[in-house]
Image 1 (tube, helix red, strand yellow):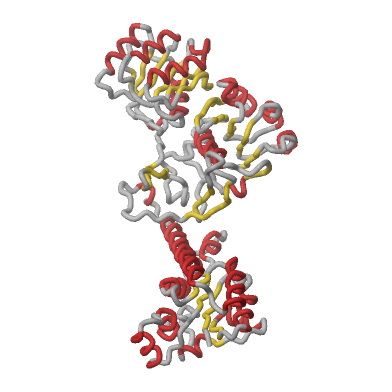
Image 2 (tube, one colour):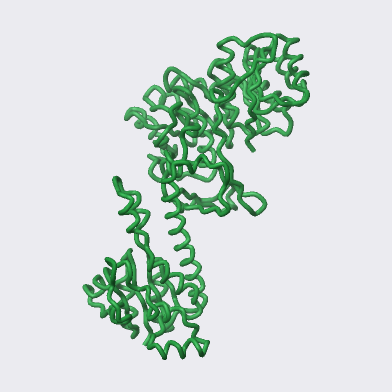
Amino acid sequence: MRRAVLSVADKTGIGELARALQDAGWEIVSSGGTAAYLESNGIQVTQVSQVTGFPEMLDGRVKTLHPKIHGGILALRDKTEHMQQLEMHKVTPVDMVVCNLYPFVQAAKKPGVTLEEVIEQIDIGGPSLIRAAAKNYRWVTVVCNPDRYQDIIGQIKVHGEVSLDLRLELACEAFAHTAQYDAAIFSYFASLLPDLGAQDQFDDKLVLGYEKVFSLRYGENPHQQAAYYEPVFEGNIPSLHRAQIQGKALSYNNINDLDSAFHAVWDLRSTGCVIVKHAAPCGVALGETPREAFDAAFQGDPVSAFGGIVAFNCEVDKDCAEAMKDIFLEVVAAPSFTQDALEILKAKKNLRLLAIAPSCLSKDRSLNGPSAGAGECAGGGSYTIKTGMGGILVQEKDKLLPEFEEWRVVSKRQPTGEELSTLKFAMTVCKYVKSNSIVLARGFQTVGIGGGQPNRVDAVRIAIKRAEDRARGACLASDAFFPFPDAVLEAAKAGITAIAHPGGSIRDQESIDVADEHGIAMVLTGNRHFLH
C-alpha cells in the first residue's frame, strides 16, 4: 500500500484529493487540524503518533519531525542499504507529501499582532517535510499548491501514480514555496531592525521577499512577457492591487512611468503635479490648487504630455478633473479624489485612476528623505534594483534634495531669492530626468526639459528648444558638471539668468567665466544626480 503524508494549513481541495487517494488504495497519514478535517469528511486517517509511536508535544511544535516519517520520505528506493535500514527499523516508505505552510505573512500583517504571535506562525515541520520530499522527487511526489491537486488526481486515476516529469516540476515549485516563505520571514525580522536602512555595507547574500501581484498583458513591447511583483511586507508605498479605482489594467510601461511620477511628486514641497512620458518627466509644477499645479505642469510641455502619466501629492478636486477631462492621459494618480472629480474622470472608461500615497513620509515631506529608513517603514523602497550583465545591481535611492546640500555661489552675481528657489525646484526635478539631465524652470514650473543625451550641450539645446521664448529669464539645473563651457554659452544665448550644477570639473572656471561674462548667477551644489 502506498503512503501519503498530508499536513496543510490551507485546506482548499484537500478533502477531494484525500478521497481520490483513499479510493486508489493509498494510506493517509496526518495529524492535528488536517487529520481532524479529513476525519470529519469521512476520510480514514492514520495519526502521525501511531506511525512514530511518539505523541505530539510542545503545543504541537513537534509532530512530524521523526525518523519514521523522514526516513520514509528520504530513503533512496534503488539503494539496497537504505531499504534494508527501513525494514530493520520498521519504517514504511512515503510516496507522497502534501503540505503547505502556516500563514506567516497573513499573521504578520494583522493589525496589533505581537511578535510572539508572529513567531508562532513560523512553520518548522512543514518546510522539513516539503524539502525532504522535493529532494527525493525521483520516488516521492511533493505537492504544496492546491491548484495542482487536480493534476495529481488525474494521474492517479489514469496511471495509478504520478509521472517523473510531473514530480520534478512539483519539486521545483516546492523549493520556490519554501524559499519564498523563508524570504518573507527574513523581510519581517529585517523590518524590526531600526538601523537596517543606515547600514554602510550590503549583505553578502541578497534575499528578496516578493510575490506576484498580477500578470501583465506584455512587457515594454507586445512580444515580451511580463509580471508585476511587490514586497511580501508592504512598505511606504501601498499595493497597486488595492490602489486602482477604475480603468484598464495597468501595463508594464504604465507602472514604470508611474514610479518616476510618484516619487518625483512626493519630493515637491507643496501642492504639486508631475507629468511623465516614457519614464521621463515632461512637466512639473507647484500651485496654490491642484488645478493650478496641473495647468502649469501641462503647459510645461503640452505636446509630450499627450498620453502621459499624471501624479499629484494632493487631493484631486472637481476643478482639476475638469482641466484633465478632455486630454488623453493613461493614468492619474493622487492620494484621493473628491466625489465630483471621480464622476467627471470616470466618464473616461479606459482612464486608469489610482488612489495612492505614501504610508509614511519623512519630516520634510519627502518620500525617501534621510529620516525615512527601513526601521520606520518596513520594505519602504530605500533601494533600487535592476538587472545588469546577468546579475542584479542594488543601490540606495538618491535621497538628496537641495535642502540637504550645501550650495556655493561661484559667480560674481549673486542669485536673487526667487532664482535660488527656482533653482532648488529645478534641481529636485533634475533627479528624475535621465542623464544627461537639464531642467529649465520659471518660478515653480518647468518650461523645458532635456534628458537622456550622451552629451550635455545637446541636453541644453533640447531643453531650450522646448522652452522656446520661455527660456529667457528662466533658471537652469544640471544633474552633473559642465565639462566644457559650450553649454553655458548656449544658456546665455537663450537668456537664462541662473544656473545650478554640481561642479567638480577641472574646467569649472571656464564655465564660471562665461557665466560672469553674461551676468549669469552660478551655484555649485556639490552633489551629482545621475539617473541611468
